[in-house]
Amino acid sequence: MSSESQTEKEIYSKYHLKKVINASGRMTILGVSTPRAEVVDTVSHGLNEYFEIKDLVDKTGQYIAKLLNVENAVVVSCASAGIAQAVAGLIVKDDRDLLFNLHSSDKWVAREIIVPKGHNVNFGAPIGTMVSLGGGIVVEAGYANECKPEHIESLINTDTAAILYVKSHHCVQKSMLSVAQAVTVAKKYNIPLIVDAAAEEDLQTYYQQGADLVIYSGAKAIEGPTSGLVIGRHQAIEWLKLQSQGIGRPMKVGKEGILGLTKAIELYINDPKQETGQEMVAKMTPFIEKLNSINGISAKVVWDGAGRDIARTEISFDAKVIGKTAVEMIDLMKQGEIAVYFREYKANEGKVDADVRSVTAEQLDIVYNKIIKIIQGVK
Ligand SMILES: *Cc1c(COP(=O)(O)O)cnc(C)c1O
Image (cartoon, rainbow, N blue to C red; front, side, top):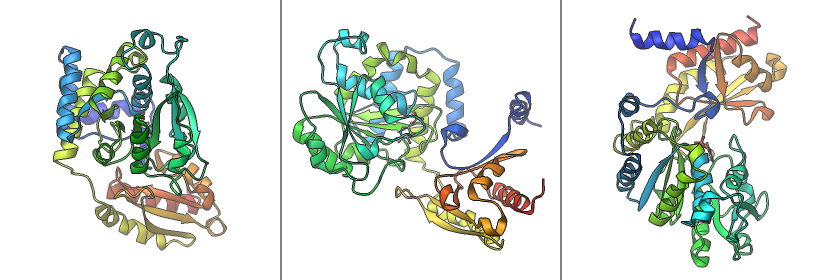
């Protein structure tokens, strides 16, 4: 037995942890993703060395900026920290008094952050909490189901510090202005635009469309270590970096995270070994066929609602036939020796989605067998 698998065994047994099959996607509650070996290697090398940290931050930032063809970049501890520090950076700029007293200072400064109402979501924690952490005040534009450029325009005044656009499957999608439309408004009034693109796969498009700061989660699409990436205009990134002496300190990213994410971005850009949607379909097809042979269960391929190249298996449970609702199935699949997690958003419609990006064909067999056992009432 290799020492690696022994360590692995030890982690699960020593702390009495359950093995997990993650058919839910890039979920923070399950540990998000598993970086490639080269990234793990870089993290471990980074841990074993000393650096002039300011230099490490600046030079990895420049390296990433060059890779992505953007003005400037910085690695942060996670996307949420990126949102908070982006807001703080645009409010404080280089004012030392505000930098050191962001929440206690009564000095007047523009603090309003305009967010389309349908973007004011809970991604696991509320967007608004990150804005407040950064010293901002959320001002919602438009309605829960509609936001047009004029809804944002009508709210812009001398207290406006930035516009925040959340590009995410968590958000209301219909009748919302596009990133390009948000850019047009931002430029017209000379207000900076922040785009939270935490789980998005395209590291360039929102910057190219004209956003001032764009934020990504390091462990989601990029599959880096726990970390975040902020890219954008030179000055805005420099202001954000100053926050390491302010609210950024309790969000410190270590040398290992900085080096690990930089490596992961390089691999993501130069060697995108990601599964295509069609490859996902191929992997899940036998699973779907087997599920469809069960009375009371139907399964089919569905494509990502936010337009990413991700195919998932939608599984519908007919409670009248199998005697269990989707909500009960979700709960039972998490019980036992191996916990299986699905995407749960459609549970109230009697459906779950299986995201197979982190699931092997062998694991899909385990999932199938577990479903069978549950509906046959076998313990
Ligand atoms: C995941 C996510 C975040 C938070 O990312 P972390 O890196 O976990 O902090 C923020 N916004 C959106 C839209 C997300 O999907």
